[in-house]
Image (cartoon, rainbow, N blue to C red; front, side):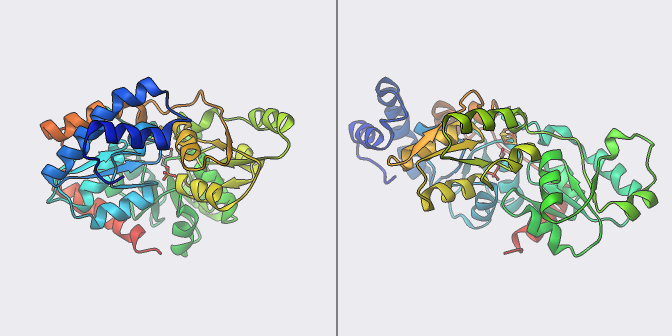
Length: 350
Ligand code: 13P
Ligand code: SF4
């Protein structure tokens, strides 16, 4: 959205876009914050990146670029502004810092984490590498920099299968999302094991003969909550609904959905197709964001599921990030250089 000249113009633009998904009193209150963020952003030469899970009044007003993890990583590698304010969670802001060490990268809420990133440590990866020597390590970008630094290549939900196939090896270690790994294993025709469930129970030689993918038991606390029963119930009530599932959902949920893809792939799917109604099995703010962009399409909601980490990024915190230059992301140089190799290798895949 181009910068409005005053708060009233900001409010009117927000009403035009968001009247169906955000109550008017909230738009009135938030227009002041939006106007001030955009004013300060221009004054400071800052750039704001916003993930697709940001709340609608933020998502549609202040980011210069919006997208899924892969798109924002690509953007972070080439953006001009400084500081970069990352309206997303810590691992995303860290990726921006890994790619832009000379710039200030700000995360508006200090504690905005991720259950997947929190599920694995660099030491866990080192132990897996010892256990499966020579097997390349693919880590989902939803990990912290020190875990990326132990990896050969990163992936996102938008390119996970392509990354695995690009390695052209019989076996890969794929961390840390169990469900994404299971979904990718299915897509690439591989067997999968989870050594964490069998402490001391498997020898690497046995595993590599029989299995082609080694996973970990991390879960997204949002997507793990969707069930096959949810899908069945909605289909019973709305037989013509098109159901889209993020690949962090359990494989049995993905199997009964009509489409699975990254957050941006889901957005594009809704934009390019003409179904009577859609249901997104993903973080619930995204349903509102897609509804605001597609007023002619009906979006059903299973709206109990908001990511508590993404939810910490508010307009007020974004304004304070710009005002007080906080919270600055730092990555030790020795870790950054190694993590960058894994991220660059992913970005080199088309
Ligand atoms: P995307 O890369 O699909 O945007 O997913 C990021 C994420 O955290 C999903 O929960
Ligand atoms: Fe992490 Fe899940 Fe939140 Fe995405 S939705 S940031 S994977 S906890």
